[in-house]
Length: 360
Ligand code: ATP
Image 1 (cartoon, rainbow, N blue to C red):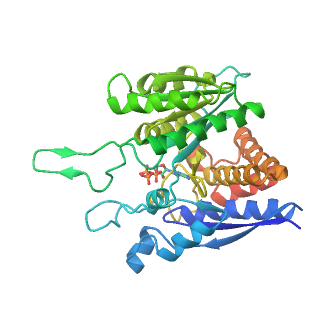
Image 2: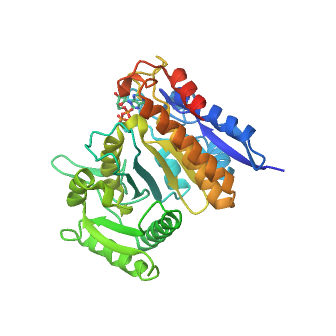
Image 3: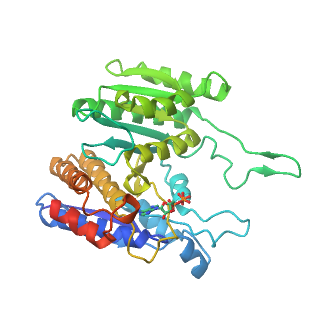
């Protein structure tokens, strides 16, 4: 009997439903071919359009069902013209991170052969590293409730020992797993600004404490500004990078740029019990409804979900199929002829889906 996973699906706003449909279809195709696993999907309401209609952005029933699911797929939420009364954008994805305590934002940066990277890499050079962005505190701590006075505005950066310890354990465990599967060299780099801010010196101290429990993994440090430079000049040297929320937010967009654009960047927000997988891009209202959104980042995020479920439940074939899906996307990109307009192609969302399906 296959193990059936309950997947909570947030279709979201803008291009959200357009990129989610191909991803779910591909997951169904893979599950149909497997004797080991199956998926049941439940679409849950949330987002800006739902707020405009129903007055709430993340209904309690959606949150409860998401919490109970084996994994959560989320496309993109938020629309610039629909806002809370205080003027801030509606972003239930951030509420989900806080509610489900998804402290580890996993942002892989993978440049496969034939990728659309702006870097001039030698053909045999491979880039494969993971940025782990703390996702519940840091400079996002006072998000939406920072102090704004007449002549002064203040936001607070918060680093806690409890979250940092979990974050660093997660990062070292990830480096171990990557080393065991030949993906990484077994190295975790703490990215901070410990030379300027005491909060980052505290962050670094906790990192060094946790590192002692992983003698098989190399632990080192880098300042965030130098890291931005190295991500462009020597990205092949990294394995796992771990950093604060705002630094991670910025570096992950740089990582997306290195891979060829936002339409290709997947992510996972992972906690102790729950995980949300979603593309790094937003709801792209400027192209919504045109059928031309790039579904690759959403498809790659579903592959991350499969890999996470496979590792968690020790189903090797689920991890293997995750890699097949990833390779199918790589192949379509390398072939160049079935790309969406954001990548310079002429193919629409459905055409891109069919190309990935054929490559599978
Ligand atoms: P957010 O703040 O919600 O992350 P954003 O304001 O950074 O969103 P996006 O919605 O990600 O912006 O869009 C930025 C640009 O990238 C837009 O021009 C959009 O059309 C384009 N874009 C984003 N995602 C895709 C995609 N999947 N396919 C094609 N173009 C995309």
